[in-house]
Image (cartoon, rainbow, N blue to C red; front, side, top):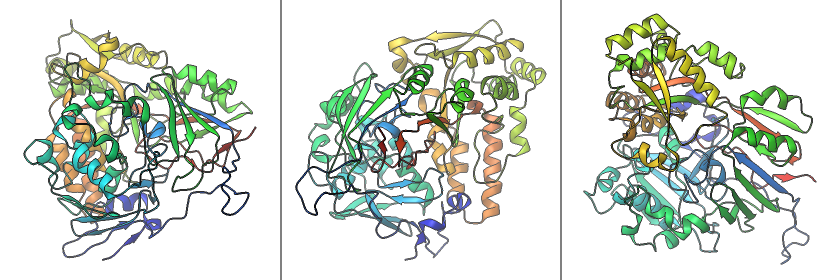
Length: 568
């Protein structure tokens, strides 16, 4: 059994690593047999029973998204902010990855290897849940084998992320099998996946989104109570675990959770990675980017993730702050609802050609990101000209395609929103002006408390949802974006193209396939790509030893939660 050392994985090798298993051969993306502890606090006396000494401080960090989308149920995939206030902080996954997406890192699995279609993970033996219970492979089996694909939790993205890779998961999720046949726990510290194909890096990337959950707590809740209720609310989101406990294996545990207001944490001194240095940690889910910017300027918030581009120049001039630019593989887009008025592809193409992306990059994003002329980009393969043409500003052709597609110019395109964001409203106003130039009228569809129900459940009565998406490190992570039921039927051809890429080995073959994927996605226009999402993150200079590099994209090792502290 061969292994690919983690330090040999480059951005391009991530794509090659998606297969790396030619017929009869095996090559694995693997972590080292054991990883050093992330950090350990100094002790006054070896073996003393005193409380650990810390460098200390209270760190406040923020993200502009509500927590009520997610609560403390880390397993559910309903909000991008969970990768900051839950995953890696309160909960761990089997693996992690560096913030530049070049190096795999061990987490709950201290090592792993691939053997044909099998992925074998060797779990840490020194891990405890926050309530003191020991972690074992039973927790992984419960998370992957019951929670991820259970018929009562089909709203979760998890089953979409793994059902095409793990044997038996799709059958279980459809109620055609009583268990997932392709997962097993041979002993307390070994976990085995049976994969449908010899996936490598693409499979590891999927695991970045799957925190392991405590069987002894969630498994005690009857499975019939997990289901979605008549109001479209996931049953597990109403439990004490989701609303109060949030028990995990991470370096911090929740002490106070007030939805959409604050999450407070204390250090977990029995964390397997070392003793955290902070005295206290606070997460603030700002619903307004500008409110977060004001808190950063006043010193009330130490780390602001995804701060508004309008404040970029001001932040650069402030002595007590520094700017971290890290855009990541992500974009701000219109999620088209293409069952109804947008069903004709020519209409969606016309809307794309109506957008002047150079103007958007300059006038709204202040040149913090370049114009984006592709829905996805991987490695250093560039952008196909036959892809870019669908994103070049061409109002004349836009109007022609809208007419050919049968667009009703008396109809108003509806932006489905919960409320109007002062941060993003100017961008939507800019887009509306460009659409108006080709004859398309627009209006807000303000849904308030009904937002989640309307956009997530039939009859899906809206035209577009303005949001962000990530295209990931490998094309495999983009499959869920092609299969969100609430926006329309699966884009089957695109999914098949991606699945072919994931098992390719020849680099030139991969490159050409990636460019063809770009061309297909650009022509189909499932998403109305507006711009790459600026990664403008602000860090107070009082934050020390954190190696803070946030990114909007797949979950990463964006901060050293053990060693970070706040200097008084």
